[in-house]
Image (cartoon, rainbow, N blue to C red; front, top):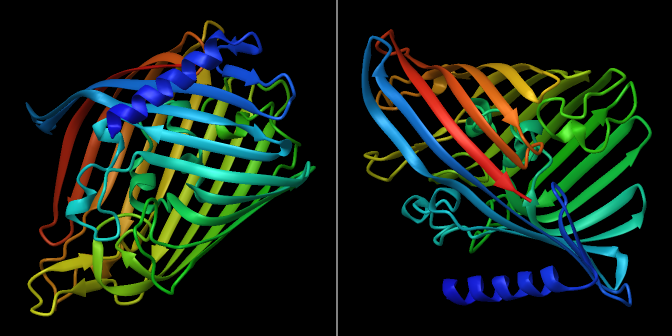
Length: 400
């Protein structure tokens, strides 16, 4: 089946490439519009090839892990059909590290590899208001919504990894005008590619305020100031998500819970850019009552990751497209999931990450190489012990 899909996609790509009505631009992919203007397609692909090393401890540089792999390999198709108001988007992933390959071991709601990441159809009622139906990213924390191909470090932060509300299937709403953007969604709550859904739904709302006006292009959803904003630009945003009767310990992600829980997520972020300088900060919080769920014999546990986290990134892009960036992030669990006298084996740890990054942009985010070095730290409250590890990463991203 996979071979058939690849062959069909290759054939489709070839048709677009050789068509007289197609064009190509780095960062914008291959674009095709039919002669009768009833169909258009934009095709893009990208890959991330990564080498990384993490030590056993900061005072013991013996390797604990190496990562040598294709981290991401994506193919994206988007355009319109019949009328420019009717839009579609399809995004597929092909590398093992990009498909949640082992999720079927921990969730009965997601029992296959996740090839399909996005599959949506949208209708633009006005230039400012659009409704989308299908599976795509929820309007959550900004770093999650920013494409993994537009990150200034090798990957998103530990805050996102813990508190993201990720993708889901449902109805999405987007409205924007002047200094405001409003986004909302009503979705299943079980996450991407789920094979069933209970009676509880997920409700998400987000507001963004841009007091100095819009950023250049989509520069508010791309890390670093590659557009070199000539006037100061600022975005202040907040998201609230309520996932009723969530069945997984991360809401839309994670292992199955033994009992459904109502989960609240709150995200806030601020972004500032000016002449190559960028400052980004986001705070995420998750809360559920009675977060620890357990099997009938209390021998197994699955716990909602209650807590909060904060991320700060500061960067500067030099004139020759070298960028230096610094990240500090921490995840603080609530005591209910690391110190409960009835469930002493449930022991979530505080996490911290200090990361220095150097990136060289050869064609913006579409062709770049990145070197990151930093420290991953965990603190065990039960044992009152802290462990620091050295992290080194080299990554190349190439796409169209």
